[in-house]
Structures are given as structure tokens and as C-alpha cells.
Length: 324
Image (cartoon, rainbow, N blue to C red; front, top):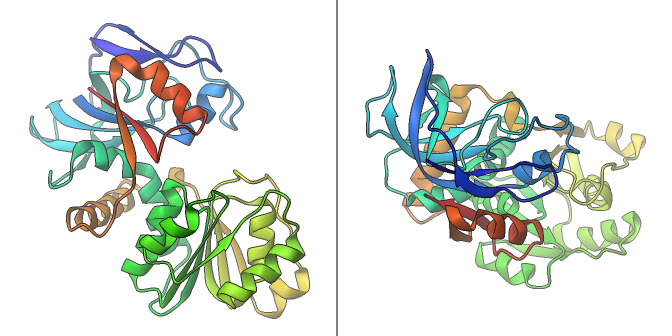
């Protein structure tokens, strides 16, 4: 079979012939139809992630969409979404014609959403959805600020916050066209981010747009998160799920304690299988109804190296997805 295999950390994977994997007890064989190239894939393959340097060679792909070929739990032909630990633990991932996945990790799908679009949503959508619902405990009528609103997590965050019942939703991003994109997704306001921002200046600019917010979805950290913390209403929460703007954010102890504000960390790795299934069911239902969407570009598996490099350089609009 064909697979995109990574031989050296820091270099893109190459499409080559590899032996078809054999499922063991408790594991399913899946015919993969779509596998996205995510920031987590790029981080793990760089050899510099907090998971440590992965054993090479391996097939990347921390998630995929496909159909069951063989399983003791799911009927052959069942369409599924699945996560993998490729790059985080020994073993191969989803960027191959066939993948072996624990039966318990398979999430059956209704098939009402195109496989490539669902793969583009995938873990990023799950992260945004569950960071808002499970970690952030978003309640109807609350005001939400989504940092990094031009990324896949941020785009889903803007849409999901409204679907969950937020009273007002605001975006914030660096890209020049991000204000129009946020407005198109229903944002009530937008805060432009600048590379030269300092915390006080950005916090003042944020307050002019958002006033105070009850919940901040933060895939950025750094200066944007530090400024957003100063815009939290009493009992407000900031949920951090990334650090693309910096590894460290600062906060005022007096501000945090005076309003019993909270800073919370989120990772998909803490979700139970049931929580993943519930989140994906909601995401698929909203996507099928046209209420949830992200941009993506499809590439054949044979062009894996090109797709990988373009995603790494930020040259893809949305998410690059390999099709098989």
C-alpha cells in the first residue's frame, strides 16, 4: 500500500510503498479516505515537541476519516473518524491507505458530511467545542472572545460559541483579512492584533471593542492572552489550548483574585472516548446543517511532501488534507 512516511525529523514525509498493517486483538483495520496535516503533526515531526523526538521512520497523521475494513466491534463499511498517537508514541498514523486503530477510538459517522471537510474540522473542531463546553463551561448569554480567530480552532470557536448560546462573540487575529472573515462568521466585533503590541496597549484596544467578556478561547498565549486576561469579567475564564504567539502569559494577581477569575488549561489528550464521540457528533450535525465550516485544500497522497511544506509555510488557506 501507499503511505506518507517521515524518515528524518524536520523533513517532510514522502509517499512510498509500505507493507499493509495487520490489526491485533482489540484493533481495527481502516481504509483511510482523508487525513489532515495539523499543527500537532508538524510539531511532533519537528522533533522538538514536549512528547520528545519520535522514533523514525513513521507514518504521521494524528487523525483521519475512513471506513472500517475489519473490526470486532464495528461492522465493515462503517464510516469513522479516528485519532492516533503518531509522533507522540511509537506507531504509524493516518497518512496511509490503511491504518490500524484501537476499536475503542473509532467514532462512527453518519456520512452526511464530506470526508475531506470532516477531516479538516477533526481535532481542531473538537478542541474548540470541548474547550468552550467542558473546560470553559460556556453558559447561554455569556460574552466570548476568541483569540487567533483566523485559524481553524479560532474559526470553529467563533461559530461554536454562537451555536452553544453565547450572547456576544468577538474575534482577534493578526492576519490582514481576519476582520472580514470574523464578520462573515457572525462575530459582533473584532480586535486586530499586531506583532509589536504590548500588553497595556492591546488590553486598552480590546476593551474598546469587547468591554468585558466572560470567556476567552486562547490558542495563542503570549501578549494576546495577557491582554485578554485584563478584559475578563468577574468570574470570567480564560481557556488556553496553544502557544503560537508565545510560551508565557502574565496576569495581575489583584485582578485575578478580586473577581475570582480563572485561567484553565486544555488538551485533547485528556478527553475520554465518550467525550470525543459526543463532540464529534455535535460537530458533524452542525456541519451537515451548514452551521459549521472551515476552509481546506485537498492534496492527493502522492503530493504529501508538497502539502506538508505548504502547510508548514502557512501557504494553505485553512487546513491541508491528504486524500486517499
